[in-house]
Length: 439
Image (tube, rainbow, N blue to C red; front, top):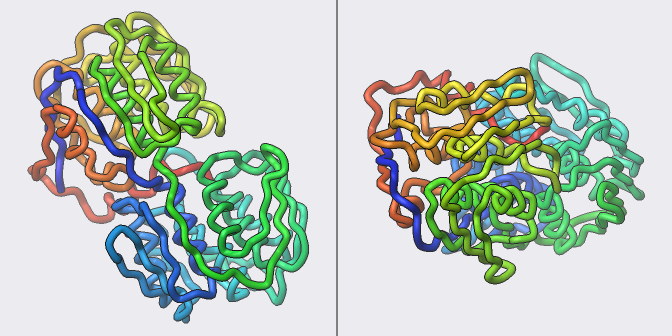
């Protein structure tokens, strides 16, 4: 086990390149199941634990995957199993994304139920109801979802609330269904549009006709997957917050500025100076005095829940009082107790937290509880006086590629070192199911 050791007080300066999006890569790798070609390829695939998990899942059902330079080549023509076992699904809830593709291509799938999650229950009911509307026969057997279908047929699907992975599973299943499907109240996240683009380039017929309405005209087969994965907007937002909290000046490259609008707005409201250099790069300069801003999370295009913890770290050293409201998950304030250990003045109740800024955080030992909480603790450590140690940073490897190296390249005094006491393997597996997009 590793921990992160940070000596705070250094303004970040320089350039950082943003990696491919985790939340786009996972459904795209699952979608490879649906393609007939043996030479599918994805570019800009991030080197992350979650990506490794879904790759392992694909290999377990017979796929062949290899890295060739800057691309990942996926041969799914040799798939001969149709089950996603608990040992893999338990470590990453997004493994359920193979359900739709397996059902669409092979008319059967057996996928373990993901189990619980410390930031919210997030059952997959929406997924199952959507697939049932498309004609799937679904049963539960000893903790597994078993789905079969002689033929999937187009249907109208309306989600009670927008579900990112639910929308993705429904899109993939409907792509090879007979007839037209309409998904209403579909999630609007750009990662979904990245999936749609990749599917359409491979022969699918999918259009987002309204912001929350997607129409899919089923096709008999998909040809070849070849796609460059979009940049990770949450990683980009995290480095923007890091620049702001350290009062530094950082240029972000390989981004999509359009996807960052809500984050840009809040950081500018907090006093940061942001200049869009090009559609794929921007410069952010941290404010001399960080202003307090209220934050309320919402599905895209609202402020992302995956940036809530990082912004709370920023608000902990702001000049006033603010309220942060979490509207997506019922239990996503686990980082509050750890930020308090640094001296942050935060009170949390139900789904909101009141943050009173302070000009002095003191480095100490902290324990990460999930992916985005890990990032928030590291951001706080960058500005805290003295040495901060963050343990259980295996969470970071799920969603941030070489974070310590990227921060060090910007001048941060940070290193990843061996922790004194390794965590229990079961504990790691259980906690690895945290902080993914709402199911």
